[in-house]
Image (cartoon, rainbow, N blue to C red; front, side):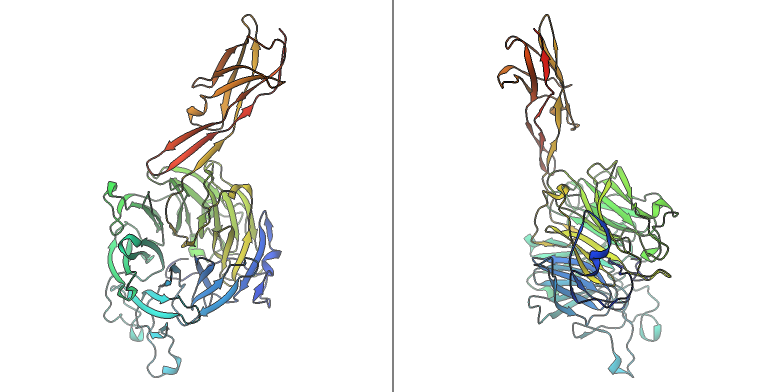
Amino acid sequence: MRSRLRSLLVFITVLSILALPAVGNANHVNRESSNITALGENIHEATYPVESTSDLAFWGDIAYQGNYNGFRVLDVSDPMNPELITWHDDCVGSQGDVMIWDDILIRSYNSPAPADDPNTPEDDRNICGGQPVPAGFEGLHFFDVGDHDAISYIGAVEITNNSATTGGPNGGPIPGANGTGCGSHTASLTPDVANGRLLIYNSGSSGNCPGIDIVEVPLDNPVGATWLRREQTGRSCHDTAVLLGRMPRTACAGGDGFTVMSMEAAHGGTLENPAMLYSFAPPLTQTAHSVSFTPDGKAFVFGHEPGGGSGARCQLDGPDSERTFRMYETDTGRFLGRWMLDRAQGPTENCTPHNFNFVPTTDGRRILVSGNYQAGTYVTDWTNPRKPEMIAYSDPAPISQTEIVLGGAWSSYWYNGYIYESDITQGLHVFGFDGPEVATAQSQTFSNPQTQMDVLDQTYRYRSGTTLRHTGRPHRFKGSVESDSDNVRCNVREIVVKKNNGNVVARTKSDVDGGWSVAHRKGGQGRYHAAVLRKTIELRNEYTDDTLVCQRAESSTLQVQR
């Protein structure tokens, strides 16, 4: 959401404020949907922003759900019945996005903590993990979640804006503000296990603090976490996507666009000091919000949040640009395509693109799962970015028919075969989608959805075909190979011509244009067909070892008179 408004998010929006069971597969089963199945849910009723829920992170079968009062811990080993393990509700401080690494949970604290009234200690609210939160504090809190029944506070890193003139005692200046930043609206984990640490790319989402804060957390001493520096990006950063492994990149979305950086030595970057590649402001962008890299890392989808997510920005008569996702090439910024939320919403439904991730597929498909406030959860196919298409959705009815009540899907993410939707006012919903588009989805042992641990090698399978004709004097079979692939090597193929009794009567190879011709010396008259044989091509790119499979195909049957 818009940073200083602490705006809403998560998804589902119930028809009205009904009394709902705490667990089970209840209300989201009644939503309008296509190709998507409502499974389990764990209801946490709230009114934004009090106790409302925000973003998600996963470790094994445990989901950690951010909350404006702390965070929730859920067992999602049974997607039909996700169970609440604990609700750690003693950390009131804005939207509370979460990250997880093993037993360490990190939570964002977005806005300066107000000063408690010393005359009413019984009403003190500035507590996090049982520890007092100093007036004016904003930044990150750290917890040990190794024992879910006894979660313990580790410490904090303050990231405060020393130019702030309010937030201190009696609404005055913040005393002793350290001037390192503008709090933590969102944050993205950048594990550096080889060096015994976690790095955090922190997004303050404020024009007063352009760039990302880089925080270091020693794995063997997380209490020693410290702010290292700010990396300038030329813009405020609302959300930051991280791609690691063989193609280390990061992309900050904020303000009027996005900035892409490299942590690769070839570009002069490191994990601690990313090097800027480019910055771009897409047309008609308002409140740039999120970025997610494709499984192969070669492209990313960008979304913005007009009005901070609190308005009805997906109406049929509204500007198309306000409900639009765009795809760009990672290393060049070249525009590849766009897609618009094509199910128009009503005047009481807050709606924009919000939080999303790609399904970790390995067959070249690019399948995006997105949460879009009261528009719900969408699954879109970006394999052909010139013509992306929606392939599944679950769209709830408005929370209210008479006024905008903030709610809906804050985040919708794919994780280990299921879609998890974090609903601002309703908690957690689980959906199933098993279309052929996700047949190669890889399992994960954990997921911080803004962080992709490596690029995935892809196997691209393309359909092929060949024509067949016959000429006399001299007698020859001729044809032309056709392929869906734009790789010309798919045109150069082995061709066999068979009589319909299965006997091979000729063999040849096609040329680079796909054309082929071979003498007809045996078999005589009869019915024939040609087959273009399967071909596998290794595509060793700079960052991935991909495979191109040009699939086998047969021509139609041809009657030959000789």
